[in-house]
Length: 162
Image 1 (cartoon, rainbow, N blue to C red):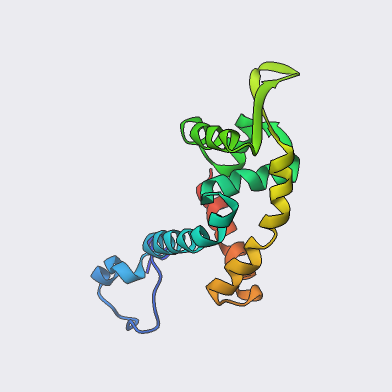
Image 2 (cartoon, rainbow, N blue to C red):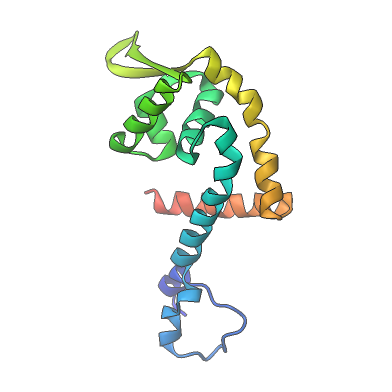
């Protein structure tokens, strides 16, 4: 298998070493397919955990960035989450209507939009502390396995973010 094919597919031990090149196109050998299905399934797993908080998964990601910083710009949130303004803007509007954030012109740069947590948004963090343990439990994977997966996925993100 060439390096190009190795990057795009994964050989299972059930395939013979002398498999035909067409086997490289088997759906179950595609990294893109595994990532796509895993992503959808994990996000769906978050749904019932986040529902009592009144958050969708994308809104949860925005709140995570703000719980780390309390206040930042729309541009920085977009960069941190790899979201374009057209995707991020409606998320922020919904969070603002829910009373969790406030959007104002940045005091140092009128062109920039600052996003700040409200008291309610800060308080939600305490309830959100229960999200990671619930997700880990629902996944049924041990912490070492999840840590290794996170490291591998972070490498994939770095390799594809040139």
